[in-house]
Amino acid sequence: MTASDGSDVHARLTDVTRVFDLASGAKLQALGPIDLDIKRGEFFGVVGPSGCGKSTLLDILAGLSPPTAGTVLFEGKPIKGVPDGVGVVFQEDASFSWLSVHDNVAFGLRRAGYDAAEIERRVTYAVGFMGLRDFAKAYPAQLSGGMRQRVCIARTLVLQPRLILLDEPFGALDQQTRLLMGEELLRLWRETGATVMLITHALDEAAMLSDRVGVMSARPGKFIDFIETQWPRERDSRVVSDPHFGEITSRLWEKLRVESLKTMGTAAPGAAP
Image (tube, rainbow, N blue to C red; front, side):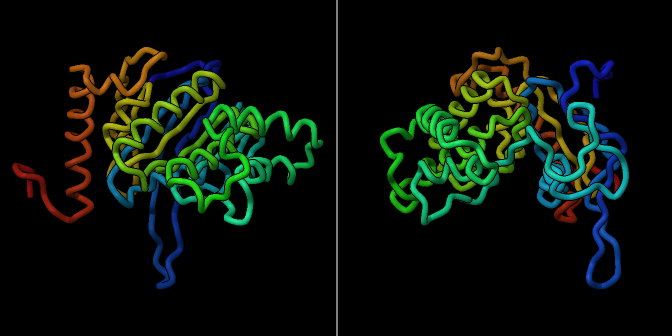
C-alpha cells in the first residue's frame, strides 16, 4: 500500500480483522489483518478467491458488520453503523416487486423524510441518468436483469453517496451486458465524482473498471498485491483490446490462481509440499 499523509484518503482500514463464532464453539478468522487506504475519487477493485472475506470487507466498510479488531475510518471519522454518505449495491436483485421503477428509486428518499419536490427532482435525474426514463412506470417483473440492476444503482445514486460500495453487482448478467453495465458504472463514477469500491470475481471486469486492483489471499483474506491499471479516466470497454489489458489480467490471474488452489486444498505445480 502506498504511504499517504491522509489528505487524499477517503476510507482507511488499519490492522482490521474479522473473526466469526461458529455454532460448534470454534472461531473462524475470515479477514485480516488488513491495512488499506482508498483514495478520494478512486475506482478501487477487489478480487480474491471464494471465501476470502471480500464481502466481509465490504460489510465492514458499509458499517453493516463491525471489525473484531482494528480501526475503520470514513472521511476521518470512525465507522459506527452505516455512515451518511455511503451507498451499497449488492449482487442480488434488491428491487421491490410491488413498486414501479420510479417508486423503487424514491424509496430511500421517502424513508429519509425528503420533501416531495426534492424527491421528484432527484428521482427524475437518476432515472434519466440510468436510461430508465421510458420505464419509470414499469414494474421489475417487466424489466430485464440488467435494467433491474440499473434500478438498484439509481436507488443508491439518488442518495448522493460519496463512497459507493458494489458487491458483484453484475454477477448474474451475461458477458455482453456486464461490459455495457460497466460502461454505465464508469460514467456514473466520472459524473458524480464519488469514490467507488467494486468487489468482483471477474478479472476482466476489475481490469477494465478500476484505477487500482487489490488482490486478496485465501482465508483469512489479506491484500497480497495492488495493481495500478494506469487507464485514463475517460475510459470504456474498448480498453479490453489494449495489450496492457492482457498484462493486467495475466498478473491478476497469476496471483489469484495460487490463492484459489489454496482454497481448494490443491498445491500449485512446483510448490513446496
